[in-house]
Length: 465
Image (cartoon, rainbow, N blue to C red):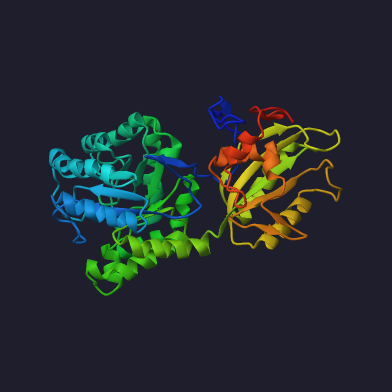
């Protein structure tokens, strides 16, 4: 386990900036939450849906709205009502062979729409363009996400725009300029290069979203392979966007079906993509794909759970790292909290603890999850001991989705959660708006109710244990 460089944190008592805290890092890369407009996207909990709004006269899918701003706003409002999380506005067709348009023409198409959208809907708006000038104008008009189908190959200044404006950017892998025989090697190499270019420009890691570029310079077989192997992109530790909607590969697989007859094929790729790790799906038909995403999420992601980890015997850092790594192998870990050193709570004098929290997805039932964590504690060396005794590792189930449960073996949420600063401080770091399902209070509110927090301190980087 290593301790990363500090990042801005939150007050232990009030959820306000207090300086710095530290986070555990291990060999499973995690995608930190991303702020897009006024919303925080917490990757892993569910799939987000991006609705496509083409304001072009020549969209490949036949949905281009040209200069009809009223129709564009009506379509965006319909997508918002159907469950879209982002509206992606494009002013230039990306179909193969489509004529390029000037930056000025593209700006004239997208800016009036984005300006109207910001007043009409309460959703983040993204700009689908590879031109820095268009991105600048769109952001000034109200866009809060850049979507570059060329992965910085055509205009690397897009990374500078994202960095200067503090905005997230979707980076795609296109092979239109360099067809590849080994498609996944080409996709991974191009994304690795683009991530490096974005980082050099100063784009924050949490502001990089990856797209394999389904349909961009790939054969039918290569698109299918990229979809099948989508989970390989997760090695970068960034969220993954998948855009298959109505594309020609679907048409060809379905016997040359035209774009308007590719809905069911698109829905199938949405479900498969989510099973293989997609965090966002970019679609024309929002309602149907939202339903597919919710069903796929129920199967693939299961329930969001929060585990509290503690150790006050032996090498405490190593104990936490071993536990976190084991959990990551068996559950899908979304986030790790910083590590805190804490005074023992409500027990006889004993060594201080190191504590942290994990947010993860699981398909285990509450009772099976309890069996899992108890077996993991034993595997990591926890001996049988009475309540309040020192321990090599302690793993508590703090929250299991919205479940409220009271059995002799397990109580959910944890019955003493609202009293324990050593649990609430890490939970507040993971999500201040996380709600207690029984009381409705957020993590920040429960933490604030404890008043002045004592005996819980960020664990400094590289502290010997």
